[in-house]
Image (tube, rainbow, N blue to C red; front, top):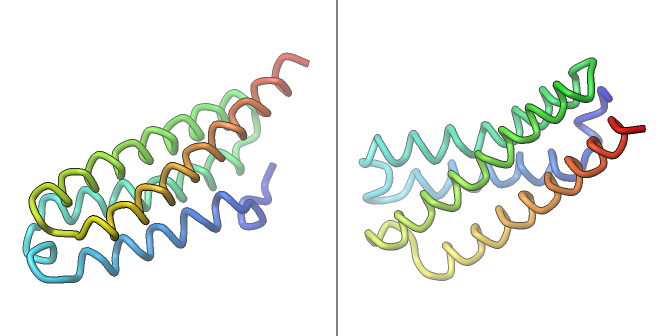
Length: 121
């Protein structure tokens, strides 16, 4: 524990948050403060909770924060669907960001499984 900056999933989630911020600066999305702020917060939450979980002193706490990060990835995907349906992002942007977020979510799940196995030993 305590090496979150070396975790690939943390690095990928930082990249995702950056991409979300860049996307929400454009056109109609920039003026939709509710959806823009929500998707930005959810994207930032993924990386933040991975980091916080990795810095915690117990496996139980790490699992708690990784679960929050996984939930935040589902929030981002949901908000991407909404953004696509109301015309804020293209199909291509949506697919790229959804795939990236799904990959992060899958990596978090693998971390959770590893932590839970460690906890039971």
